[in-house]
Image (cartoon, rainbow, N blue to C red; front, side, top):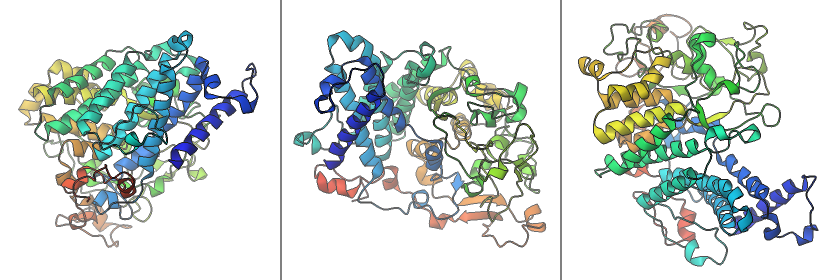
Length: 569
């Protein structure tokens, strides 16, 4: 209760402080200000809604979500990754989520009770509140399953609601989708925004989030033996609506950025961040972003030398340039040298991971930054140093800013590539097939950008490929470090298979690593095939209870109606 009350005080302090800066506002004496006088103009609702955009994740928080999956190895033990975590008394994620839900409920209630003469002008801000309430509840239910649904801002007297039991996960999913439908019916299309409003939640953003939610819950239910056709159809319809929008297109500037075009998608800035001079305005792929600004809100830095390392499992996912997996393609060059496994591969491989013996740039430390007036200056050579560059032999460079501070690339919360992937997966999981026309409408656009041939049903059949496996391959590669991998394993019901596998790195035995300095004298833990092992399978676990995270135990004491998730009692 103290947290809720303090939050209300902070909200109103910020609101009044913001308004005090407006020159033409006729302020009443501060001791006379009331909620009623504040929420009297459309601008007040907009100012209140602005805080919701802070709820969107940073690139680091998205990356950290993948850091606890099976495709990333951390330098030290990660309890969430290896399944050794236990219950905790408190959770800032739980607390902040419900505090933020209260804020969205507060604006919705104020909008419902607003003067009739301004209701038409504030509908968009109510819709934004519904969108963000759905977004917050989606993140909550992914973690915990069913949670209490609150549609009104709780006060200290709302004992019945404060001590309510958990709603079912199905009810929470339905509530999220209902909120998104309400937002979709009101929000403007992306192209209807202009000026400083560009980047606010659009109709397409709500449709894309609806597609994400419906796919998540649809596949969760399907792989647990339930009929999920209705949910999968919602994912198909919502993603198709976004695909049909003229507002978005994939970023593909190989014409001026060459084979590193994909890397630069995640580095575009307000000012020049690449040799071609492209900026954020050249990117029409992002649908929902957390915005940063070079002048008023620079982004945080990432130090490339301390990043967790991609695993061999992830590296092996990249197809050869003939569109075949490495175990089927004659183009795969093996692993005898440090560079051989990178040859003839999907272009994204060296856009999201560093190619050994090439120069890399990073904003931290400053001497590693790039200078476009002298493109060869600065940087460092990636020599596969296991002491400080990589713990697996692979190095991530996706999202690592290359220019000196300040810098402000936006964070892609939802982008068009994900919508293509949702569309193809939902079609297959509902119908058991994807037509060649639908491959061309979705995943083939991603493959073309990566320098790969189109996927067709004839190609799949003649090469003995598995459709589901190819869809999941594309998703894992394309959305690497964007926070989806663990959730994908959980909804597909394969986390208990994939997560306990050893986290391995490059092949060592019989290769250049074993025969040449500086690697030959390093003592590595190796598996039976001679691969570097960062964490053995014996040290990893994932059981049925891990599919949902434990509720913070203090909440169970406060509210005896809450029931702990199975296996965490």
